[in-house]
Image (cartoon, rainbow, N blue to C red; front, side, top):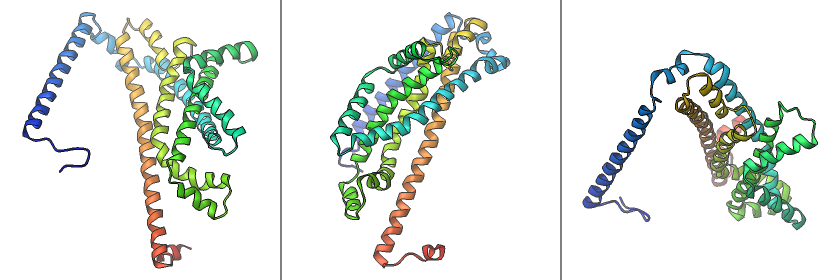
Length: 296
């Protein structure tokens, strides 16, 4: 079946697609063989470099799990602060008052333009020079500050775009009912925009989790990726093995996050469809369904 944007391939096109697929898989297989051969020549595939992750629990209890805890701590704090702050900034960018909209827009564009690593380094210097934060906690503070400033600005743009994507009639109907601008935003526009914004918000949350590794690279933050150094030093220069295990942990962590967000999105969409069906039934029949009446 053809569609407006896509025509089903004919016999010749199907043969070409099969040839392209086979060729790509062949090139991928050759590349994989070359990578594994190079690793084998360097001794990186030897069992003694991988076995500590299975046979020695101290690798996990001393390095990987504490690093994962620090990563989750920094990511959770950043998310808890960046989400409401980003929502406030996004609402501020939609304000009818120029004295609110322009300064908020300047703040958002400023922090979006600065690399997050630079924000972390600057925050670390500020904490060192002008605060009494202990050096033990300073890397965590700096990482969270940099992540919050950058991601709140990005989330603000996500919120603004999500609200602007809604039909104009939603806001007009709320105004016709006598609702103020704040009430319209809080009770009408934002709840509907959540489902539109959710995929972009989830992507940004995944970015926050991954960007915690920047703090370990230059600020001495003992997050998950930074544990590669002590593992390599204590278990026979198994750099490739350590990076592989850490990468798998990040993949599993982000997979859980995206799966939970996908389920939440499905529930929100189903809730909107159910509400729409109920509202349509009431409009057509002039009375609430029997279930609603009995529930009342």
